Length: 463
Image (tube, rainbow, N blue to C red; front, side, top):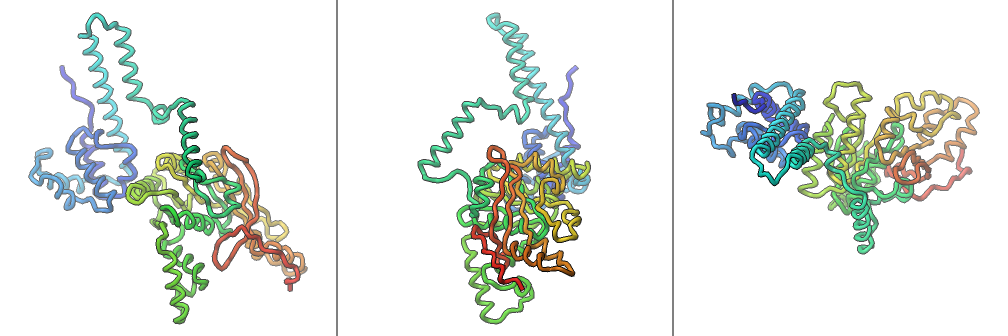
């Protein structure tokens, strides 16, 4: 008796309905399922059409999809228009999308395995005498292994090929008199972390107010002068980021810009500052609680349309995970996905991570203010393991200023003056390089940026 091939049309319809209802869910499943995985060919066509529309910032709904489908086409015994509306109406919760995608993918793999098995079964029946059974078995195992090879196995290459690729990139950079990777624009950072290389995950941590977002934005802005950068500003709204930049350029306080509390001369200064941003290839996305899938989709789209040389994400705690495991496991999955994203995009990913909420709380006495370490980072052990480079930012001035003693303040004032307008960059890990190090940099509070020029300590300024 002939058996039907494994398939689940309900799962296919459910996934398509979810994507129609929530277009952003495409990015959650696009790495799992593709057109060829759908058993019903018209489902594959609809999936491809939705993907093309969503990736070009068009809304994929029944009313927009129908223009590219034959309206009177028969799908499941009803017209295409009715079929699309039926899938949208019956769409299950979006949280089920990845489950349906994996089901569709698994069934597709089973069908491919059955196809391989039948082909070699037919060969075993009909092969000429010159082809032995061992050769048929060898062909079958080779085909089956190739079918079920993991992404890691599929990416295996001889060391000699990998070395040849490294040498080729180095030779090309040498001929062009160009350094491999991107410069951060801050020599102290480059000395510690090395160039920003494609396919690597750079993690930057520090206490709130230490300047990690300012440093990340400073690096993004420097790179964006020459190449496209995507700044995923999850914690800070895009306009807040723009206001901070305009404030630094115009030397006007950000709170006055927000209130429009400016005179005519200052308005002109603000306009001149805005003109300085012309030509900056910096793209800001301030979507709240994005998933790695949605970040991936936007980054892939930007790379295809404009190019992409650097991805900055601020910050890890605000990335949403579709998994229902505990927070530590969620962050582990997110970090592994970001590592894969850096590889797929072939760009450096700069990820900001928070310290634990309790960092510094033990230092009620200003004398106990200390530099942070990996143990102070929330889920620090995993972040250290998954990152290629891990660096911390510390500003003792910020910590000391909030711990002013009520008596004997002379020593405190001296310590505060010594730390004034300074920051420390602390390298905790650099894969393939020197693993630890520290650099002192200058901090310009009016511009919210760091500089390689370290301010001179003038103790005579102490009151």
